[in-house]
Image: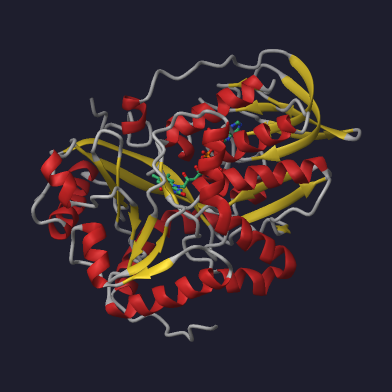
Length: 439
Ligand SMILES: Cc1cc2nc3c(=O)[nH]c(=O)nc-3n(C[C@H](O)[C@H](O)[C@H](O)COP(=O)(O)OP(=O)(O)OC[C@H]3O[C@@H](n4cnc5c(N)ncnc54)[C@H](O)[C@@H]3O)c2cc1C
């Protein structure tokens, strides 16, 4: 059943095909704990899990329900690279910690799949590889450069030529591209709920419908207030990313203003016939191409193809999305034609101005992050591991820590941000900067 009234609250495919969510209590008293984590998405829960494994007893505060943010509403592609931030740039800016961070990214897809196995998280995981086909000959050159940059850093990636790309996709619309066998896809809601269950097993306390409304320093620790309770704690992690403004804009205003939340729409087809399925992405890889106005596809466990897109204006969104994304399907896979869609929903992506994710030390024993730029699944799990290390204070973390940089004229930038799509569409037609393969 599709609820088109509000895409950000619409029942997602993942809601529809996953077991009913476990309901966690709301915080209604005053308690104490060692670590409070604000945000019940992948980053918050992965941090809690890794902390619990170190003997901590973290408390997770979620404003709505576990996985109700981006973590339970995304496309589920497990991708071991960032959207735009390239490894050499990361290392150039951040030096040694940048090198640790690129290693984290390189290993992040394997780490997610391994964690799912270790914690018995049943999440329809398919480690079938991730393919980034180039949408033009010129972009194929960029793909080669990107592939060699990652290969030099030990990623098991390789280039596929046009013929191999055709065999992988069942489409001649792309020109070859970078393939990485460690990627794949999951049911992200089941994965997020599974992380919460794994946390609970290790003694993590989870509260839903318990938005943090205020953070205050008290003595050597922190007090986090919700509507009906508060928690005294030593350490604090802000893991609210693109949803930082959902409940209050005053919790950590500098973090909130460091990104722009962009609405990304998801569309799932009805299950494909066996014949069609075997001719389109027959080996079920996760696919997202080189465009800024990204084209991407993946199967779910019931053989629906899931893609998505963004809109500059939201008027008549349902019909326009069906038309835009339907046309893309028909062009890429003519045998399929314009498909019927069974689910349309959306979620918020935290976009930073430089397309880098940013990690913050916000105060004494207080950390946070923002800016997934659409790549936060594999990354998010590993970020959680590193935040646990930071909170534990033993060892070198692989995240470059900075102070949040609020975007100037944030309310205006937020309003204008969807129109950046027009720029991406224009840029997708331009020749990218040529680069030396050994650069
Ligand atoms: C439509 C869509 C498709 C995407 N596709 C992919 C993909 O295929 N692959 C990929 O790698 N990435 C993808 N992403 C990005 C990825 O989903 C995110 O980067 C990732 O889920 C971020 O996890 P998180 O834990 O940081 O944030 P979230 O999952 O958004 O969690 C933040 C949580 O904080 C809660 N919160 C906010 N304020 C408060 C408060 N005051 N108190 C308590 N709780 C609060 C929110 O309710 C929310 O649940 C996609 C994102 C979207 C929206």
